[in-house]
Length: 145
Figure 1: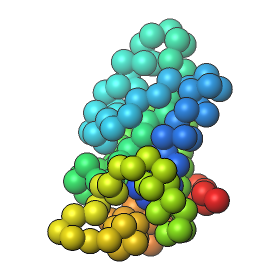
Figure 2 (figure 1 turned 45 degrees about the vertical axis):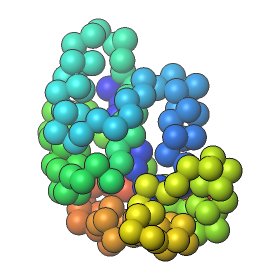
Figure 3 (figure 1 turned 60 degrees about the vertical axis):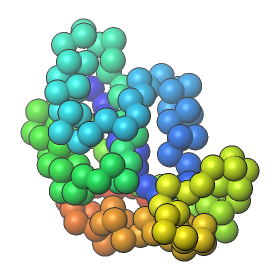
């Protein structure tokens, strides 16, 4: 079984990446908490190959500590499953344009913050290159343009 966990900055393209993966045969699960990923993978493994390619869209805004995600990845690997993490990021201008196109407010745009301030707010979540677990999870980075 192959598992890909998609994470990254708000507005960097996680949903678009999920659509592309779904079109190429992945079964997509959006906003699944890290501790449920292992159980869900076990369920899918028992389905006899029907769900042999999974992609979880993991949003750091869910409020979970990043070490829960790294723990889930480690457990999936202990079970012999191929598990990778795709972290997407985008420059501030791209994020601003995407949120203006959708006319949605940025999820971190609160307390009177501008979209420019909110667009860089994900960097402090611990999910970036210097975040906890980045050295042993096997993170692949993608830059949106």
